[in-house]
Amino acid sequence: MTERAQWMLDNCPELMLLVNPGTLQIELANAAAHTLLGYAPGQLQGLTVTDVEADLQDLFYWQDAQTGQLHPIADQQAQYRCFNGELLAVRKSVYVLTSPDVPLLMVRAVPSQDERVAEEALAHTLSQLRATLESTGNGILVLDWHGKVSSMNRMFGQMWQLPDELVHVQDDGRMLDFIVRQVLESEALRQLLDAVLDSAETKGLWHHHDGRVLEVGSRPQFLHEQIVGRVFSFQDITERVLAEKALRESRDFLEERVLERTADLHALNEKLQAEKQLQAKLIEKLEAAQNQLLQSERMASIGQLAAGVAHEINNPVGFVSSNLSSLQGYANGLLKLVASYEQAKDALPDADRQQVEQVEAAVDLSFLREDLPNLLKESIDGLQRVTRIVQDLKNFSHVDEAERQWADIEAGLESTLRVVWNELKYKAEVVKVYAGIPRIECFPFQLNQVFMNLLVNASHAIEAHGTITLRTGQAQDRVWIEIADTGSGIQPKHLGRIFEPFFTTKPVGKGTGLGLSVAYGIIQKHHGSIEVKSELGKGSTFRVTLPLRQPEPPSDHAPA
Image (cartoon, rainbow, N blue to C red):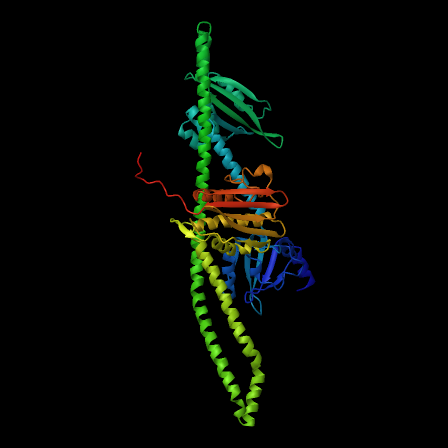
């Protein structure tokens, strides 16, 4: 490549990679790729593209590409693994390039983290605004700086009894005329609706032809200190006005009754406030339960996918393992046969013996005899490791179990540790201090999800490199499990809220705030407890305590 062409690529702000589909090696990477992924200049050349692309769908794509199935990709979400092990969210495209020698694949990617976070924040804000408008008991009307209707809630339409044809046609002039004609102070209301750019806040009473009294407040809507519209709030205070009139008329004669009535109204207001607060708490609990259900469904879907992948891997691993075992036996037999031939070699004529010795030297028989068993042993050991990982995936996928089981908690910790090892190995050294606790009655795969959430959180709390310590122990009829890290710790003001749904101290887009909430729910289901001790700058320790045996559920036919 010419210096001018390389200069042009290095000045491109997008990440560019040139990949050989046959070897999957990165043959060329521009300066933006090295900068965004944290590699030194030239360090990406020679790596395989699967060292960088981390998503499962990307791995399948490159496997197909290696077999000659080349096809382009347009604007697909992906995750790239940086030099420090962190993941970078990108939008990527892949182009197939034909060349005289071999076809090449050009990858172009741009970070998408900030864009997605901004879109989610905007959607969240708009959703909150719409929910606020619809939940208020007042009629809300918003006019833009042209005097056009930009928004209104259902209560506003019901309050003014707007016909459907006016709402659907969206004729703002006819709609505002319809409203103005319904009050006695039509001209004054028209002037108020026309004064969209007035900087003052207003408040007044308007009398409807049907006898209702409406309290109307308005205030300007600002954008960067510029008035861009006006918000009107309409409240039906007819009952309040009538009550005030009745009170004024009977004030001189029924002062004691008025005081009693005021006390009754105060008590009713307190009751309504208490009911409102109770309703708000119930809504929060419902939302938390709904989101935990969604989280459980997502985990079940992931479990089904993991079980399917494990099953597909397990079949070829099985026959390869069987073939390697047979090959090991055949190789041992052949080595024994070669040893017998060596003992009989001296009985051969000189010419034949020299020919045999030349063949032995050519194939380096002594090295082959020593290396062949080692190669077969290492291959069998590797397959056994793959088998253990596949079994761990199958075990971890049973998150929707319905029956309690007697399970080894320390074995569950080991299984979960192998599943999340790729998340931990770049950040921490894992120290195990097991006490050999007895088996307990539980939902083991749900507890594995708790351990996974705590281990991943411990990894995220460690900024550079640290230590994660796993401890177990027994106290009478209960066992405990501790997961401690040497991370940044938790601020004291946050310790009382970490198990609340949606509460997270991670940056926007980095966490959902459901991990510890789900873990807390699972431990409560097991009649256990989860506690945390933390010190800023030194780390955190989570202790899970569980009973050896779960209490029996109450009988449906228990006496009253």
